[in-house]
Image (cartoon, rainbow, N blue to C red; front, side, top):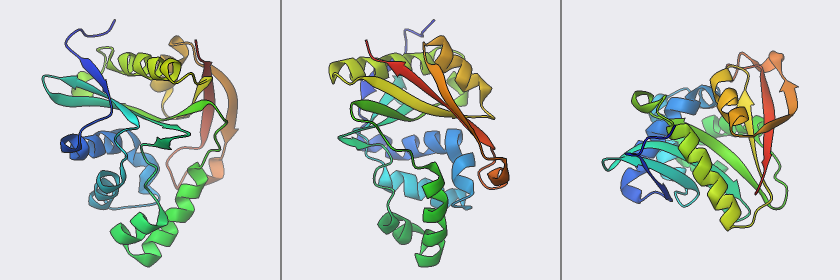
Amino acid sequence: MTDKSVHYRKGIRGKFRERAAFLYEEAFGQKFRGAIKSLGKRIELLRESFCLDFCIGAFEGGELIGIAGFKTGEGSLTGNITFKTLKKTLGFFPALRAAAVFTLYERPQAPGELLMDGISVTRSHQGRGVGKGLLVEIERHVNEKKLSSIRLDVIDVNPRARKLYEQQGFVAVKTESFEYLRWLPGFGGATTLVKKAG
């Protein structure tokens, strides 16, 4: 059941950039820690790199409480995280290390596919259907753009997220294990889930 007091909007205005960075870090900081140890530097990189047209925002009372980033052929929420922005934020040698770690997360994208770039809902609003609402808005965007499918990856330490996606009709198509890397990102496997449009 979704919360009627929550409103959804495609794209987020610049004044919410800092809040969006904190929300993303709250959900995915574990993945980023292996590349960038400093919380402050991670927030700075996200704040400066986000392309806010490529996300859905969930708002309550004018406050950003959730975000769903995505990637299409037109661009992506995290599309400006490049070696140039890494170097500007971290310096040359730390940027080299971060770039090497980020290559582990790269996922090729099929034509006509929307690739999810993560959903995050602030802890105080979890359990109120906000994540489900964000997924519904992502599906609406996919249908408006006449895209063919939505794809996402969920890590092995986040069974709650996987349950949400499967309840919304996503189907697991592949599971990868990389236990030898668990020390780096904090997880040792991920499952790819897909939902056809329409």
